[in-house]
Amino acid sequence: MARGRRALVLGVGGLALALVPPLAAALNQPFYVDLFRRMMIFALAAASLDLILGYGGMVSFGHAAYLGIGAYAVGIPAFHGVDNGFVQWGLAIVASGLAALVIGAISIRTSGVYFIMITLAFAQMLYYLGISLETYGGDNGMRLARRSLFGPVDLTNPAVFYYVVLVILVLCLVVGGHVVDSRFGMVIRAARSNEPRARAIGFSPFRYKLAAFTIAGSMGGLAGALLANQTEYLTPDFMHWTRSGEIMFMVILGGMGTLIGPVVGAIVLLLLEDVLSALTAHWQIVLGPILITVVLFARRGLHGLLAGARPRDG
Amino acid sequence: MNAALVLEQTLNGLQYGVMLFLMAAGLTLVFGIMNLVNLAHGSLYMVGAYLATAFAHWTGSFFLGAVLALPATLLVGVGVEVIALRTLYERDHLDQVLATFGLILFFNELIAILWGRAAIYTSVPPLLGGHLRVLPGVPYPTYRAAIIVVGVAVAILLWVLVTRTRLGMLIRAGASNRTMVGALGVNIRLLDTLVFGLGAALAGLAGLIAGPIYSVQPGMGEEILIQVFVVIVIGGIGSIRGAVVGAVVVGMVDTLGRAFLKPVLSTVVSAPAADKAGPALASMLIYLLMAAVLFFRPEGLFPARGRS
Image (cartoon, rainbow over all chains, first blue to last red; front, top):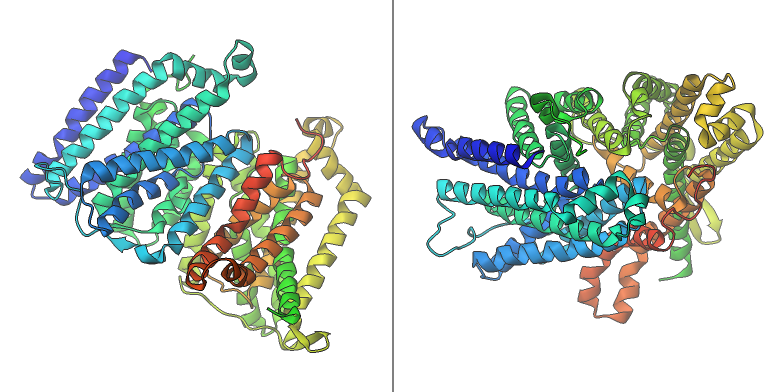
């Protein structure tokens, strides 16, 4: 997507999202602040996956692992009385980045189905690790005693927390946009469209792909730290493989390789879940076929349908 | 830790490996020929288990239930192939993963609507209810022994089918060059449906066997599915031989790890530490194994020939 268009969409979308808390207050529906904050957190996770999935062609089926690491990076210090948000969120970013570095260093050697499966395997390992952490609740997880502390910025105020998440999301999208448009991003995209050719003109795609994988992991970890604050509890289920599948679906639903698309995908999917689950307890029986239909018939996602733009960079 | 216990757990590992093989064979054949990553394979396992349980209650006989459930699961598999999966063969793996993920949601919810979310139970048929003496003083449940026998028989039948029959020849040809087989006048669509149905029936067989010893509930397919993926990735995707080796290795490592990792660890570190680390490490063991195999052999132990 052209840089100008992306800035425009970001500006308009950001403004629209910024209007949610006052509107919800006016309509006396505080629930929507909570719902939209949740959407933005998943939007961040989906956008981070899009960096490697859409731009890098790396089909990671274990992205929920970073969500889990980020959440535990908030929960474990909080359990031991460390409530400082800078420490917790910083730890989330660093720990998930390191995990992604290790996972990526092994996974990127493989390709195709093997890549899908090995990323899934690593996420499963971390999932079982979470279950085994008896001190931190085992497979029941644990409650977060209090949200992260950021001095005067009070996250227990729903609107304040909402704007913090919004600012982080917009910042990450801006940074992500610069990354994909940079020389670094060009190499990543070149490696996706033709790796031998990228190698032939003198690049070593492995290091670039690994760096992208690590950045995506860090962003995913940050989303996890936000999610733990959002739900005020954490369980190994944050890392369940169905969660990875959901994040992947958000990317595809919105349109991969667009950064904005995954945000739309996250919002639409969570809205859909909200509406369907209000109608019937068996909402997944509707969601499943919708998912299949989107994959079969709307390959470029909502972004492709709405914008009519080519999702693949030329 | 005595020899009898080790023998028993080794047999359990073999039995679990056999179950994994029944699942892996279908999955790897489907991948080999149609190049399809089918996450919904676990759903067919679940469907097999539920249908067998339902038919067994209806007819009052486990064996009659099994005989009815097998073709029924095959039909479900063929239906899924014709309606949803056929168009996915030409798509990339990402689309396949997502669409079959959608199928999983659909099937789990459908089963929950029809039978509820709680686990249902079937009993071991009386004929296989007792124990065998494997060695003097080492009893082993007849039912589990029967699973091993069935699994080995299926493996031999599959081997004969793939290497000695015309259908098997077409399957092998389809795996190495689909287009060429089609050009030679073989109805490749029919072949696809047949192979998928065969895989579905094998998954159903695994499911109906699993009924009496594991819990039958929505989502049961995914627990085993991920381990089956570990099996075929370790063995090399598309290779039946790889599926056999991978299944036995994963079955053994998982079962023996769960049984003996804790006592072995406690000889090295303190008992409380082993108590904590043992179960966690045991659940992670097969994934560690898979990561290690892929690190040294990125295409698995027996890469399928004939594809680039």
